[in-house]
Image (cartoon, rainbow, N blue to C red; front, side, top):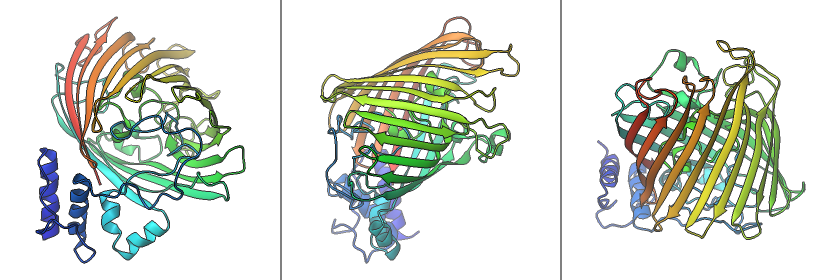
Length: 458
């Protein structure tokens, strides 16, 4: 085995068990450009763990930001910004991510220098999990970790992206974003017509070219407009498919059964420091535009943030059309409210009403669902935060989960950053179905779950 690769493997094992990483070189000096690639990569992990990594990427196009300051500290929280879908960063916010280990290691090569020069990022993460459950057959409708008492590779993400410079107001800029997913989670991210044959064959692990879009930033429309064209995450949710973007390891039932991705065009316009307007069209949730049962679908959302940055309101008509049910043609209306009690304590609440029309196997008409979820997030230290989630969900006719019942779930979880590149997230969760047994394949009304996952960024 290459010596650099061996050092990387040892470093990763040490990180997994919370031990101090071995030095990248015998003299503990950071890897130089004369070292092999894997030596540079392991050296980047060591520098980050020692606090000597780059504080901010040289990919940041413009220092500073326009508008309100960031309301949160990230890390430890998943994001420093109030929730906003459809874009990587709100307009006026620079790409402030640190350079990841892979980007650092590539920086010595001609290709890496070319990427830096053109503000192109290459990064990703590896996310396995384990759980113990009182259910024996399945954890569903808990999603992603649906197998009880199992060790699972949830997702491996590879990302290539260029963020448009929305801080400056002098010129039009552009960007792109591509995410490739491999793992068990493809079962939830898959869209009809995008390698969805894997679901039909019930493959345990699969892949999904999950996100791919291009951005055009136009500075002279209001205080800036970003036009996004391609496949992007569904706009309004507190939660997201990507593990590092979530406050907890598992997902709410609300999130399990709502839209995941949309393919089309969305515009995001900064009207002033408080108001953002989003409007666009797509081919209906989780459906490729080349599928015959697509439906032309509208999306309109607004986001308001108070002058003191303590409150956020985000009403969203996420998807509306006249079509009948297809793969996941949900009519979705969502409202999210966020409040910051202090720099360390905040809450997010989401409520929605969704339905499909004329679903085969159900009586003609709508198949409604309703739900609400609340997150209470508490920063405990610069490396750790705690999140408490409580939710209520009503699958009125059983079309979304397979059981016509009311649900509640209550979750306590922690996120701890062992290093800037390595997260651990333990969690405890209790679920209950009221009208009939919906857990363990229809055998139980209650389910208790203990779970943990890790996220290794590269």
